[in-house]
Image 1: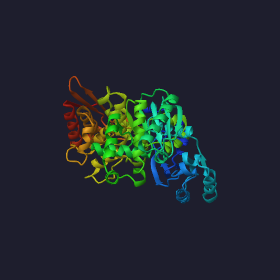
Image 2 (image 1 turned 180 degrees about the vertical axis):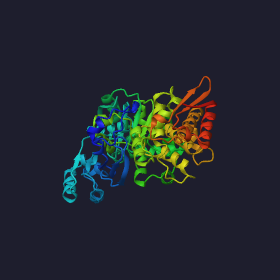
Image 3 (image 1 turned 45 degrees about the horizontal axis):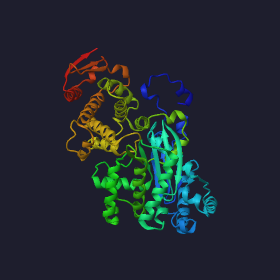
Image 4 (image 1 turned 90 degrees about the vertical axis):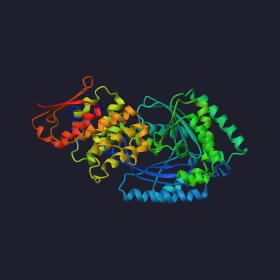
Length: 514
């Protein structure tokens, strides 16, 4: 189907609009590669799938430490240059093997500040054919903020991106990037400062106060972008015994960060590194990064803290998106793509949503989008062995690369899909995650899952022929009105599943053919 035909599509697609992953502008972004040449690491990421919420088709990082020693020499780390050039050669060969369009490569603080940065770029161009775009600090801040917007459309707050040699701040509001500043508060540079810990902390305080003067008051959410922040978040999870090991959208408080700073100071770093699965190169920077984070929180006083796995690389992808794609819900677009690619009857998710929606007619918008997502995903794991299908669904929902989901929402979606394939949630390896949901949310996830389990029995290509379900909460009556074509589908198993749904609602049933 071409773009013009899609533009003439007059069907009612509901509040989430028509799927865009097959739109020509979206197909152009279906597999793109970006290279991020930072002060500490060089990374290739190849995005694939639904452009609005892309999957990571390929992701490789080399810890080159290009910025190590620059405070003393003013030049790139010689060993880092050799490693980075070898990595970029490999990345170019990989891109050719994947038949990708030309890679987009950006370099940040180390290359832009080093006196031999231009020579390094020339060497890379000559030996690999890869043109490096060296961006300034404000542009780095903008791209990182756009990466956050890829995962949180319409979000607001302060984005803080820490690299090896710099730290950037960017203000976001209503899906737009506002004021931006850059600083030298990268842990590689802080490690080389004279004056010991006291001198370093005085320097951090002075720089942070100057940043506040430029950025103004920032009391909203703080989004943390960068490997050092993610390492600190991983340690915070370890300290708390937090059960869901997904860094994206992990939440912390200022008090928790203070506790984790003390925990880091008291622990043997090598033991802690091994327990948390953090690389040695990254762990060596954590003590400097935690000093920056504590001062950042004292200076700006955010209301809460969210870790973002999306940053400059995702911002480069966001840069290429048309406005109509940027405005879409990344969760719904990713689920639509998954249904089209993996479900046995692509498109049935829309019919299923319309069928079970009366159960949630008074639900808020953030719950309705989870209902829609569950309907789209209800059949994508059918290839899994029946004995493990329920757990596969839960695992995919809670740990997959899905944007626009809080951790509690991941568990809600996972629990609903678990009930899609089994009548009880007890006896799985995920029980420690259930407590991330309140009791009422667990009950609603059960209702949603059992509604999916029943609705999937009415598998028809003609959505109008399925019939209707009505929920009368005051009377505690669940009505089912099946069309004549659908009536033969209401066999013993379907009836048992309908009764299970009614039991979850503590309802009586009323079933008729229309």
